[in-house]
Image 1: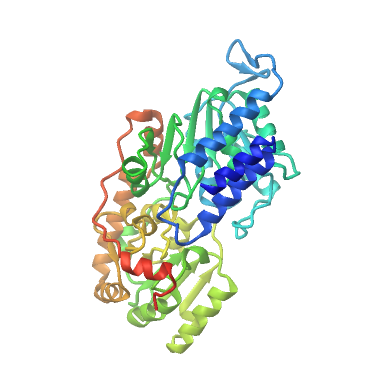
Image 2: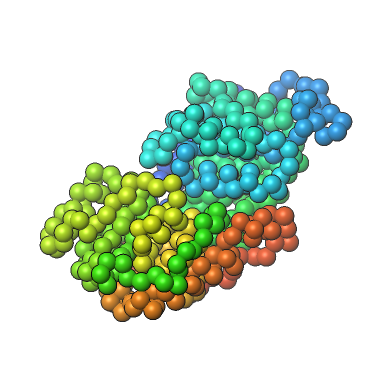
Length: 467
């Protein structure tokens, strides 16, 4: 692999910064190429290289007196868990999960969050806030220390900082919440510096550094990725810790009926990245007017809209003679769960081409029926395996429209009960905590459903000839 030769040459010259940077830039390029998403997940060679860099830097650092004192204390403080992350946001899936870990109480001792890249430098997450004050306020209830790496973007300095902090803290549990391209975190997570290391495999539909290393626990959060990691990547230390959400209840789930004068109210959520992916055959902007034409109701979109996305929807709705007030845009909500209840949503259409995992959990808990999409490029994209077995999934717009035509209030009420039951059986916080405490004795992820990949359509899109 050419990038390994380049990185190894830099390392041979003692240039740790350029070695780690070369790997980071390569990983970033691979993860952002739509042709790899859902198909290329890991590189054992790059993972081993990053670990080797960290091992080499750690060995060259000046010796320090043992920081572990009697009584399980490190540096004069009680040892506890450490969360090694790239960045955190006031909104965002992996930030919410980190908060769930803190709330679980499964990992005693005062927690520390170490951020390798400091605050507010992410371009790929520009739709989310990484404001230091807001993030600290979010985690204030958990009595957690938050520390950011050095401001100068020198990867060697950042790695030394992370290694020094881990040497001092000597975590009982080290959790990796790194961005998929963060070579610094993977280099810093040395087995000698923590009792146990946990790799949280978020952003799991993309290529990610660190995926294949032999951690004590490799945590997968969906059935699709759990089985892929176990059977395709041969990772035998993986466990299934399903996504969860605080239970806000499912009021009036039995009485739910069509909202607007007998017309169906549908809903979707997510930013543009969930609805724009390469040259995917089906477009949200093209399909939404057809949905509204069939339901004669309204559609709620929850989440930020770029100017392009807003303009595309406005244009296709205008061309279909659909009144713009039938699309209700809610840019942001503190709780998707509560928002769909307050908006009296009848049916939720999961985002496509990329499905939302945590969003589905909140919809299930709220007692809202869901309609899923079978993404022909990758099973992982569609998240169909996260829904209740009876949930409808569509491969073509015609299938979706026919299903919406046939829906009755009785069906909606029945599916509302099925959605809530599935949440209670699979995604409650109590179930999450039970699985965490069970360690490797936790049950495996549920079996997968039937799925068919359209290899020809995928290939035509890859070469720009889909037409």
